[in-house]
Every structure is written in C-alpha cells, then in structure tokens.
Length: 110
Length: 113
Image (cartoon, rainbow over all chains, first blue to last red; front, side):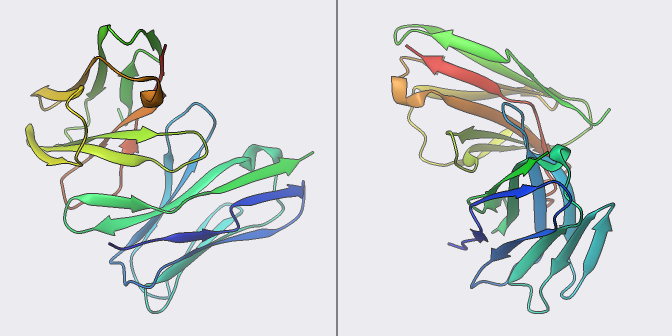
C-alpha cells in the first residue's frame, strides 16, 4: 500500500504570511493531485503534477513535484482568509484507486 | 457542465430505515466512486464503478448497496445502518478509470439515529 504523509496536520497563521504544506511518500507516484475541501463540501481539484521537478503556479499557490516523484509541496504566498480549508494531496494506487494523505487543516486569521 | 450533483445534501435516518443517496454527472465520465469521510479524516474509498460495472468493493458492509443504473447516475442504497455510519458521503467521477483527476460532489451529510 502506498502511503502519503502530510505535514503539518494543522496550521493557523495570520493573513499575509507565507506557508508551505508537505506531502511525502516512500513510494514513487506517477502523478500527485492537490485538493482543497471546505467544511460540508466535497474536495475540489487544484492541480495535478506529473513530471519530476515540475512546478505549477495557480495565482498565489505554487505546487512542486519532487525530482524522484515521491513528494510534493504546496506553497501559499500572502495567505488570505479565503485560503482556509482542508488541503489534501492524493495519488493513484494501482489502476483504479486514489489514495489520500491525512490532510492539512489550514486556518488563516484576519 | 463540470458538476457532480448529490442529493440529498443532508439526511437523518433511523437504524431501521431504508434510504438512498443519489449522484449524477453529465461530463461523460465513465468511472464513478463512492467515498465515506468521517470528521477530520480524508475520504475513504467504498466502491468504484467503471462503465456501469462494479469494479471495486472495499470490503464495505452489505448494509451499503451501490447501483449504477446508467453512465450518468450512481446510487447508494442504505439499510439497517448503525450510528457509526454517520459521515459525509461523497460521490466522485473521473473521465476513465486510469485518470485520477476526480470531480467530487458536495456530499451528503448522513446522520444515523
């Protein structure tokens, strides 16, 4: 079973600060996805990274896939209260399943 | 249309009740999924349908019964549930089985009393 470990599990920071969330595994993944989930809603796909070393930017969010495709990071610049939510990394396990990390619960205080 | 629609949004049911959760997508996706999510936990896979056939059952108790009437619809029939089954039930779809970019519905918040 391929496992994804996210850190930190909880993060509470002030508006305007920067932060990084990590997603690590001992296994190689063909791709990794990042989702954001708000309370009472389903996860929403933010990005997919496929190539080792790949960097993708989505406004103030920067996603990186490790060179060995075993880890990924999400960096948020100048965090805003609207960034509050549960951030989940996920990757394919076998041909049919998606395995999720435990999630990082992010709170941005005004 | 990039939406996965789930109904109802909230459901309270007794342990002797029979109810159904519904999920619909019109993106032409051929793989659909049921997940269960407990508070402060990631989604856990329950069932996978591919081309309307059950592909994976993650050892889910028989009190949960999935059904895929056609390529756009996915149901989850519930019977004789336990209070510990209370959770957010999420439906998701992908364009095909190997594609892991999932579109999730907003979920059904189920409470078993």
